[in-house]
Image (cartoon, rainbow, N blue to C red; front, side, top):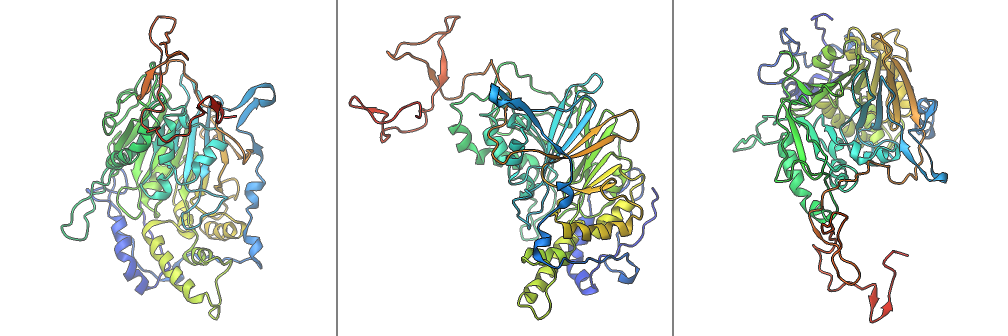
Length: 547
């Protein structure tokens, strides 16, 4: 890769550039004297305006009718893969199939943007798991968890207990919304241990209004407030056991963490309702060896590092996972920036956001399948929507042309690039393909680059060389799947709200060692004075077994 910089046309007029330049330049200023290349000189800021005639251009042919916009044939053409196995007809439950030895599995549980709410695509979330490598144990990670994704996790057979290490790229709602469900219900399901959440430290951005305070907006403050916001829920569920005796808490050394793992609040650090943030210095990117390590577990062989990206506010990050000679990058949301270019050279799987152009974004947002004509009743609204989309795009995202340019600058090119955070349909994908191929002549669509979709699975196998064997699949699942099968425990601790067990005559019950049996007390926190009893004056009102 060379340090040569070329102007990138933003595709806006000078007037529009002046309107949005504060956002664009604000995003480029990383702060703290950070340079864009490890050991190198920080690049000069890109110009805010340029001659559009010098830019690579693409064009989009819109389909003749609305129905042509409602399908994505690439995904339907992938081979199907069933994530669970079992024989329910003979009492064997459907359980999740773990990765094979030397396999890194990447599953897209959410792949969309918040302005395009669709049943077909939920908000962002990626599940990465590794099988046992040479002398290593399996491991798994959640990257972002936007709204709606827990349904997809459950459909895939991934239980809440396996979603215990969550890496957040930033704290926008479409990347964190389902964290509440994961936290609140994981502890009473099969995650009887703390929830670990990685994310950025405070942004350091001052409030522009007096008294210009600097908010405590890092992940530790976020977790502290979220934990208290969920207090009613966690207490109400704590007549169920939420911990187990044999749990061995990780240490800073055993997980290679940048800080000591300590929970927010007063929860026992061994309990399922303990929330443990791992706050990262988002300014770090490996300029000094090891300064950006988020997780490095010698037992599993997984190393995860982080680097800053540019998205609406300081503190957005991308992550790079390395294991057993395999590597993947997930950038979260970002404008095109140089850290991603440097980090992504030669990785096996490069997952980067891509948005439609402002014009496409705008007419899709108002329910059309092509730009309206000036005499259409929707034209004024469309024009305003384009202006808004340009402002958001230029401060926060990588539209397809900019994404194509960024990919052309990565050397060597990633083995497989996956564009995500994109509402896929045949017309929009074809439009994106035009822009990306204009910047990357010779790129093979469907082999060198694909677009993500919910329940797309990438099985990545290490075969002894720099290139992996990558197999894309469409998950074969049912829309009517019930609870994913999770881990079972035989050494659960007593719940927080408990009582001594008694027989029907009220006599205490004892275990085989002669100790009183303790059970959860579901009535400890409620007033039952107005409850309709199951039995009343010798009459049965309803059955206590539910039938």
